[in-house]
Amino acid sequence: MIFWIIISASIILVISAIFLGASPTVPDVWFGISFLALSIGATLLGSMVGLGGGLVIAPVLVLMGLPPPVAASSSLAATLSNAVTSSVVYAKQGRIDYRQALKLGLLAMPGSVLGAVVSADANITLFRILLGIALLLASIYVFIKPRLSKHPPRSSAMILVLSTTASFFAGVISSFFGIGGGVIFVPILIILVGMSMMRAASTSMFAILLTSIVGMATHGTLGNSDAVLILVLSTGGLVGGMLGAKLSLVVGERYLRILAVITLVGASLKLFWDSIT
Image (cartoon, rainbow, N blue to C red; front, side, top):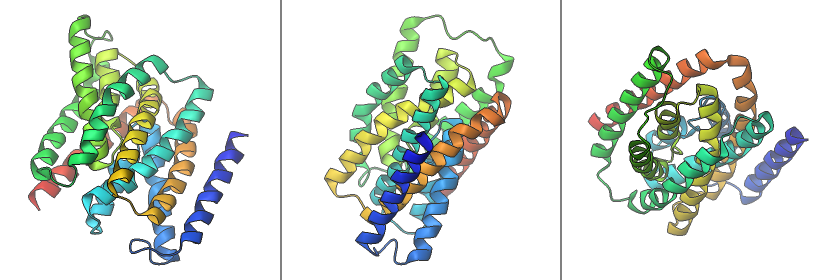
């Protein structure tokens, strides 16, 4: 039933994009197919590791010459549809910690609004460098976590302060870069809460669902959108999210952790490269 609902929704989005016709970003069918393939591949990987597909989609759109706010809103569209379908599948598998997901998502919402508002005027070079450092440190910790104690920090006050600050920051980067916030949510859930990689990935996707809704609404209000591109990327997000959530059971804990580290390191290197070019 879920499969056919997702496929039906994807068909409706494609028909809607065709009805709207060409746009400056999607001038013909081949561009549309390319964007669709990009979205499916990026969101498939993103839903498997709980990071969303924006880490791949947003940089590609910026490199193609789209204004950063438009690239961010379009990437968030794919991340949102990705989060919807993967969350549905993960919920059916019983792998979402709703309490933690709601806590992170709600704390990140104000940051999502702020990120969208300042996306056009902020010093993006400095922000890329700081974010790249944070992602690199997070990837190192996620990699060495199995070798450390399995218990999270015992100070509830410290956990509260760190998770609140990090969640707000996740909301900011979610809308600012269009990457959903999973790059912060997954390390929080593994490092501070003590979750396994598989549970952290599924819980993160539900939190991303909340931040993406707020980010998309804010970007839309500000006029940072390309309707045709959003529909095409959203279609890919629906399909990629469903496939990634199902494949995550096949891949297993160890390989999900490796995929998370590779994604985090790759994203940080891309941010460093963009800041110096």
